[in-house]
Amino acid sequence: MTAGVRYPRHVRVRARADFDRIFASATRTASPMLAVHLLSEEGPPRLGLAVSRKVDKRAVGRNRIKRTLRDAFRLLQPQLRPGSYVVVARPAAAQADNAALRAAFLGVLKRARALPLSPTAGTMPASPIPSTPASTGA
Image (cartoon, rainbow, N blue to C red; front, top):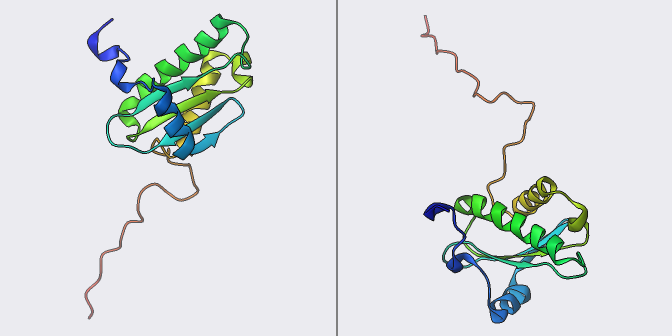
């Protein structure tokens, strides 16, 4: 594994006190598969994961969800605004494939305004209307 591709300890939310603080004072955005609690703080974006046995009884299923979300976070981290993120998986995440989990995570982050919103396609032209040269009066 190369140095720039790792998921180092300083970008993880691990302590129980940190989880409690984030759950108590963060803003929450949810989808049918995931809920994201975002607490704006200084420093790099940090990730905490909560995947309970209610989501999937099998450890292999819970670990797959966590591994997929960690990798998606790692790839999005340079674009994310600073703060602590705790992602809580919901039972629908167990039936979703990895691509659907990534898409749900990306969608929830955009709704939480943690990522820049993508430009929407509209009916107006993308370029400004060219100005006509002013004519001199006769």
